[in-house]
Image 1 (tube, rainbow, N blue to C red):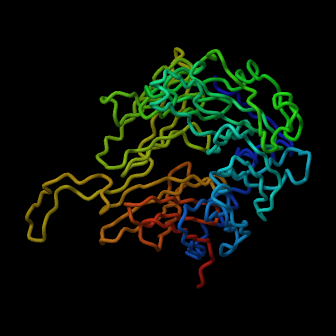
Image 2 (image 1 turned 90 degrees about the vertical axis):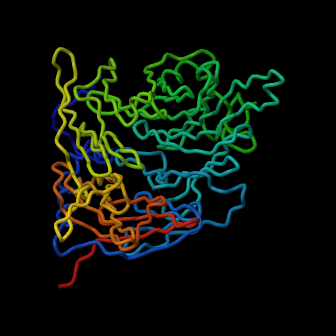
Image 3 (image 1 turned 180 degrees about the vertical axis):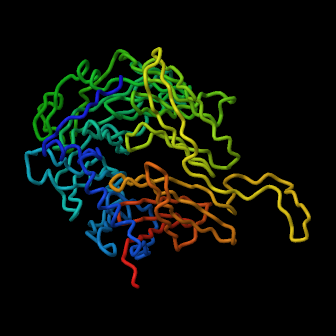
Length: 502
């Protein structure tokens, strides 16, 4: 099941395609130049800008969004500058969710406007807008449906599609008393994105997928369905479309499913054209805690925690092909902390697994080879470590003092790993570390070489760090963005790489 890979010569078009998809061999020279500029001794990060908001703040690829995407600022300049402000919207027209869309470099699209970066915005009244990412100008709009309430957007990047997910349909007590059975759970509207075109609206129902469906996501061409019994099932989306798609649809064209009305126009929207009546074949199924399963690596593996109390705090790594446990495939950080440790496949596609605890970050190298058809996994020693305060201290008089309680590994009064961010263009890991020794929480960011873990630079955050609220730190080439919550408001801090004066 591992993708076949071999070295070969590539032409310019292929290099552009690889660069666009984030495959780093295509951008090695630019990455080395970027690392050189970032790590020069006479250059360091300075805080240049802060802005507060009463609503959540979002950052994506050099753009900062405020007030439910109504205001957009660009962070590529020395200081963030406002790109646009959208006209005031009513409550019914409020933007519920949005995705930033950038066209591929290696494709010729029907219209020059299709090549421009755009914001896909879903409103409360079921309109999907495509707005210019630079000006906010409306480029295209699609009415989804008068029958389903859509609220969420999601990417399936590898397939160049996105989906719009409706809210779940719940059975009311009155309906249950009357013997009415609610078969439909939710709907997904699936679109190709380059250019924007409808694939169809898919109905998720109990007859096809069973009872207890709690959530559905689309990723890597796979429909992942979560259930209330703590299981996850994977289905082939391509197989579903091929088997049960009633009729292909085209935005702006008439359809017999709408009584020859135009697809995507109000008040008709997009008709239901992917309706499953029989259970599709299950590609993969696993029971896991919190419906959490991750798939990645070469060959394909999955990480999950079994839904049993004795497995709490452990992460199991198994082959996707036959569910064989990898050698050293049960990982346990053995930490005593309020926040649970996190584990994920490294986004650099190296096959490594990053395991983050309060005082340790392990890079678990997924070096695989076939030996009696079993996977062999070799675990690299601790990638990064923090020195914790000892449980026994000695006073100036020589008296030994023992603590009466065991301090948590993520106690705010000591250094603690909080999050890890990967900068793919520089091949650096940004590790956020907090320390509240002096009563006020402080944080700094350590930039580490992604391959060796060697510390390259330290960046101190000026603003205090309050652990009781949510934080997000993003590292994007010469820019660091820290978004924090403060009571009922939010604040965005921007740091830029600048040359220091001698």
